[in-house]
Length: 59
Length: 526
Image 1: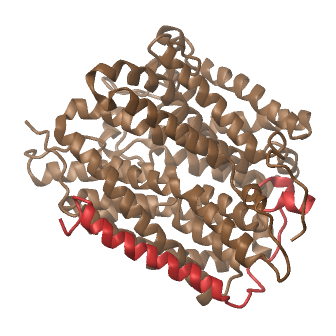
Image 2: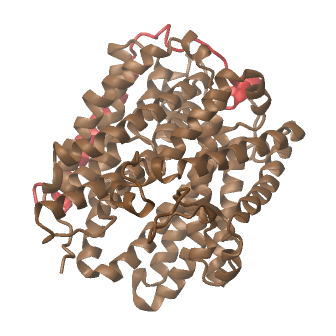
Image 3: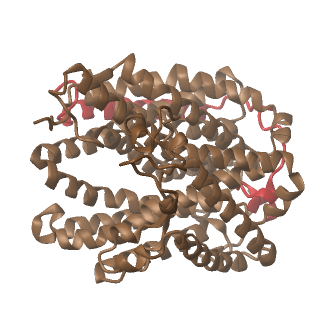
């Protein structure tokens, strides 16, 4: 519970110098999905936005 | 994942996250009372630029370096708040000491140590705010003469943030025993989340403020504001959905960082810096040091952007040919609210000066439009903090942290949800509702909107900036660079550099161009 509480906090007493840059996990397919879907959403919103926003370069 | 028997309301009185909501909404509620004619927030302290020797006909008397915001904005108690002057520092101290001590007591902190630490941090912050508003640090080029200066750093309110961080870092790194004592009250996470709830007031209040501006500049201005609002929203969604995965890819595939670190970095560089890093750190349950490292990087790089980008956008590209592309790109590229607003303001000054010089005074742009374009995209990006933290929490709970045979309770999503977002949206929607329910800027509803403004400004301006200052100071105090060095901080600096200058800024400029190219600012000359 204590460990749970400390996660994600910036509070001083919970500060620990840990090497958080090491031990990278192998790339997981879910990460591919996360990245790809983010880009897909960006493209879809971009296309719709270019049509509906009156100040866009298309208008 | 271990199953922990927690109710949906667990932690409401014992977690910083919830106490940011209570604190934020309490003062938001006090601000709302102005609609009923009761101004209970006008005591909010706020600094003004000052100089030791005011030139003849100039401004910046040291005796007016602090004032109560109610002295300017209150409709019902202006005279009273005018009398407070520097005493507004004490009023603000007493009221926030009581409020935060109640929170500290409920969270079972060492109350005596918190009280002493809070008092020291508060007055250090106020002293820093004061120094940071010396005209040499804060005055923009067009105002130098008012303060009798031939040169100033032109950092706007950003100077105070930088100074607060520096002073905090000096304490945190050279007076470690003192920093350790102060750590009971140095709570950047609590302060920034509370500031984000106050930011919700700012977002909701924006249309109310715009209504007043439109009345002055006519329909042309109203149309422009509306267009900026829509273009900013779409540009921000597109930009963010490219920024985050792009930075995540860079961090994971090129720099080989672990997932949680890459996720926090992705949010920190992509969205609104410190608060995004904290929110994402909470959502994916990253180790505390990750949020601290990213927050420190965000602050330092934002300062560098603040110094570099306004000059670049003014003198290299796009200049006066596309001022709103520059403003909008600034909002997407500069990663803290304070630095972005300061950079937008600086850009506003630079470009307005430039167009006047280029046209021999035949074209003059109203002050603040370019700043608005910078702040507008920033505000939309701010809204993504909660939404994206929620999406990432879902992905981490259901896909990444989940192990074979393990079930994840639906309530886990709720427990991971950053609660301060609730306060942020509540404040935003209620002010938005006030705007639309009172004529959306029509003359018959303006008296209500003006009353709402009197209560909103001390919260969105005074309290928010104060809590941002407290955040920067506390962040410095608890940041020990020797420990960060042990954690190979330098590598993250390079990730940030590559992502920001080779990816974020170019993409921000392209997207800003796609949605803002050709937008013109009304000419108010003659």
